[in-house]
Length: 442
Image 1 (tube, rainbow, N blue to C red):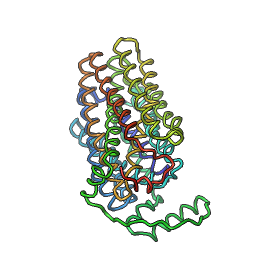
Image 2 (image 1 turned 90 degrees about the vertical axis):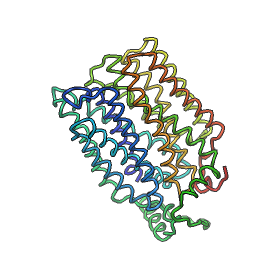
Image 3 (image 1 turned 180 degrees about the vertical axis):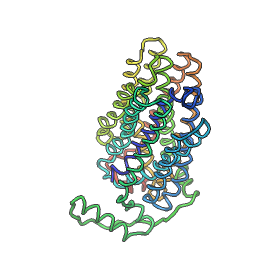
Image 4 (image 1 turned 45 degrees about the horizontal axis):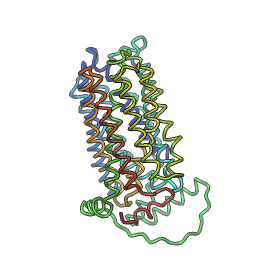
């Protein structure tokens, strides 16, 4: 179940990395002949699509269940990414990127809700971080694909970029098959009064796991059914106001940081370090490795030392390291290789920080509105973060290293500010059930 659901992050990583690596190629006359600003605009369209998809499908996942949305969002992504590769021009490409983002954004709400509702409390932190880290497996796969598909000695550039998007659609088809037997969340079933169905799902999971049923005390659960916007607003802005401030801060900072660097790194390598566009994928591989390993290595400590220790540490360290990297770039001390090494170090830590943001917003709010809460936080962070690709695309067009440093400084300030808020408003959620966290007043 974890693999079938967690592969969402692989898909997102594949999509985002494809467009990032393809950015310089899409500027060529034989492809779509975009400017760097146009590439940034299509990246922003993808991110805005994620916002719309997250809110729309997040609302539906709380009302209709997690499982129904697993397939609806995946099919939207699959169709839109295939059509992206068939785009005849800039505007059609931009529209299809918007809808591909909508599918992925919808996935986040349903999948994050289901995973946290299925994972044992004692390992929820490390498992959640590790699953979010698989985003970078998709990014690495995209880098490997572009090394082949963008090599003119193997495939013509005018065709290779289209095949790259086709690979995303093929992976989507594989995931459809993988998800056939994934059950509905027992917690969602109970909350909506489907107690017999919840019992059946739980018994089937235990049977597959070879676990013996243990005798436990009955637990009283209030059946809510679908909730309205008034209940959502009261929960977010009255009952859990501090948690809302925490979630918004974490999501905004990490979204801006990632969108700023990830969607522009290929253009920085080609425009500032003069890397050949067809070799950009080589530099993405160590960058992706650092991002993937960070949550795996550091995830244990989020359950051991706790959220209120590790979240501030990783956010603050990411901001300081990024600022140092930006200063070295401005001073002219970095080439393509050392730039990539510096980014890999920054995002070894930042990847764990970003994953902890998703963990925070998915574990701190009640079951009956978890999907919508995740969607709203994700949408807020992504919508604000969607400014970053266009902003950094415009900065790259200026050719100024100083302007790029100021952009890095802004991202760094957001991360450090979020670290302070996390220390003040953080919740000791490690090892605690979702129900006990929801029962608190904050």
